[in-house]
Length: 164
Image (tube, rainbow, N blue to C red; front, top):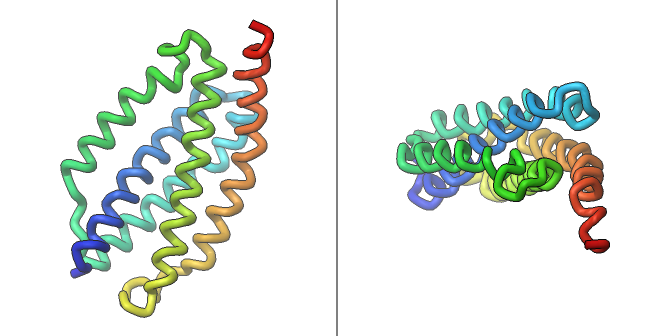
């Protein structure tokens, strides 16, 4: 079984991975037929695959899923739909921008997870069976792909703000 610090760390990242996977699917569904929707049709399955990799790793390390964090994350994802739809701001473009930016930050966090695990991989046997370098590179590729859409969404959402 993993130690307490690893247990907490992996559960925190699992919560973020759950939110990220749901957000990627939401962006895909709400932007079908657009460049963002096409990007998300490619990225959403990869983000979900990374979440599954984390779940599998947790199982191999004997880390149990924290039900409180899972429930809190589920609730956060459901409530974030109002914000990311633009309902709270009255501006759908702002909601899309915030969703893409949140997902971009989540992917950056995922890259940080894989890098941290690589740094301690000699201490935890189950980490040896994971291609951490490949996961780091995949996260970097996801970040790069999202960045163009994040800037495009920012431009759409914020371009008129200075003239008001």
